[in-house]
Length: 334
Image (cartoon, rainbow, N blue to C red):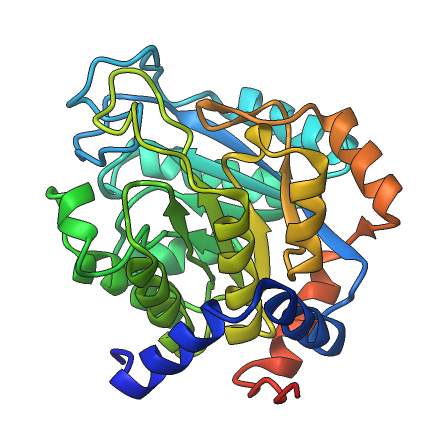
């Protein structure tokens, strides 16, 4: 359901609150609807890298651009399971597998993915996949294999989307999210800041996400990591305060969702990350790489969590919060 003018006006008003008031309101809601000290720890592994036919202007894996990323074929099951075991030993509770495909194709490679999902799930890890567009019957097969979550980001507003990607449409993305939901998988959908979008684009992106029914279980908020060779290699970075505003607004609009600090954390100091947690973020990715872009050292992440008195959030607990608060209307804060 497309956001109404009244909804956009309300979200715009929230986003533009004085920062102290905005964070106060977000923290009030976070305390009410989430474990206020819990942070879900995830690991993202690229299982098939590069030569993607999409022309996403932010992505170093696109075949349209000459970037430092070397193409790699689909990893063997044993290698992926080994990475999953390392992730679990390192403290991750969710293991996300990303494949640089435009869409999921039936055949030997998808069959291998299904077997891999089954083996990773048997380790006791929550499994997430992000592999481009997929049909409902394919989503059903992923769920039956043990996948719990499917990620498919909206990236930006509907209006700004054609400036970022032309090889698929905004409705293509929304259709995939509907297929995922219809198959009974949880939805992970978010966006990227710092791609030249306006504040209005951020407001409209958050409105689209909040209008999904039910709302996404996970909402990753990314800061663009410019990569040489991509059209956005010289994009101006989003400011820390604008990033925090977006996190806080997402928390207010989606009380039961996990709001995840995703790409771009390496460029954030501890104080900025702490502000994000204060604004309602409650998940990060562990590991020194997010698909193909750098990420903070795992030891640094645990040190920061310890400094802030935060603890790992159990996936079942996060799921319980989401189900209990699905569709909740945030309480007004005076």
